[in-house]
Image 1 (tube, each protein chain N blue to C red):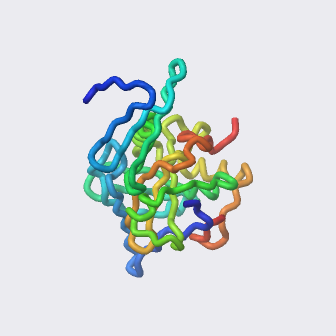
Image 2: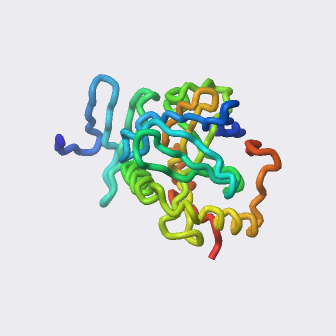
Image 3: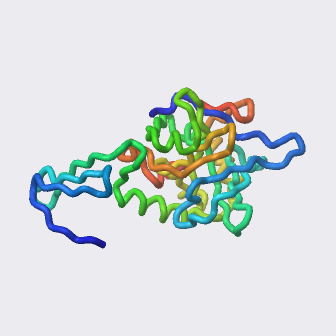
Length: 89
Length: 143
């Protein structure tokens, strides 16, 4: 990992298309501005972590309980489409 | 790019083989798990099973629009294009169901749905742009 120290208003260029600028430093918060082409996704790291841990936790769990879950969902008022594959909104 | 409407899951082919899905980048951290069959759980509507064809991995999926009123995920242009969707196309959006803590505590991941091109089966697990509006562990049942 490359470690740099930046002050407010200083910036970094990553490759030829991505710019990261420190806009403001307030207490323990850093406000960053990022310029990048739309095809490059920018995502908060904790969301990626959440998704990874959910994928692991959800893998092949308790499939035999699905019929029970299906019944409870319908009891709670879930409307299923009358034609299979008709999905809204 | 918001989703106005939902396509139906790819229908099984006439010889009743299940639909095939290819997920770009797999399901992290299982980045090599890219090729799947998608089967409707006939005994447990509205759930679906996503079964990896070359690894012993499977997930349960559900249409999040059935579960969450007004679910309105915003997809990035990059993700939309990555799965080959044109701007006016209707995607197939499916959320992963987590049953690790049993039926009563079952949840679905609304921030990391699968965005799938229903015409080709090409898809990707994406992070929606309005992730702060939803939870990765949305409860299906009330206590």
